[in-house]
Image (cartoon, rainbow, N blue to C red; front, top):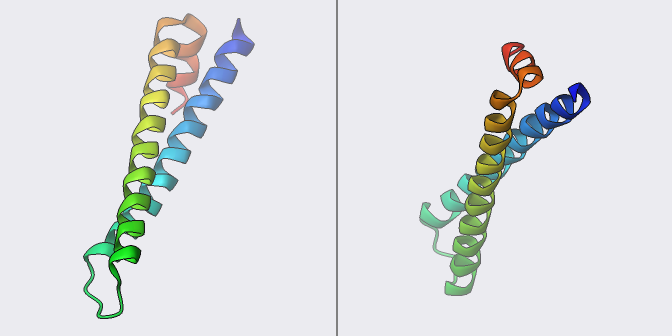
Length: 86
């Protein structure tokens, strides 16, 4: 059971890192949309908007997965030990 808590803690940390990285990439693409430039075409703006939205949606998804792992750890006795490490 302790090994399960350790794996769940690792997944929680990994999911949070993925979410932060995807959030940063999504913000980068969003900045590409709102910063004015004369060379942007409608097609490039649409690609930037779609990529920004997909990265931000994936970021939210990974934040939700991280939260679920954290809630599972809070329910376990061994999991609470890992959460105290933070």
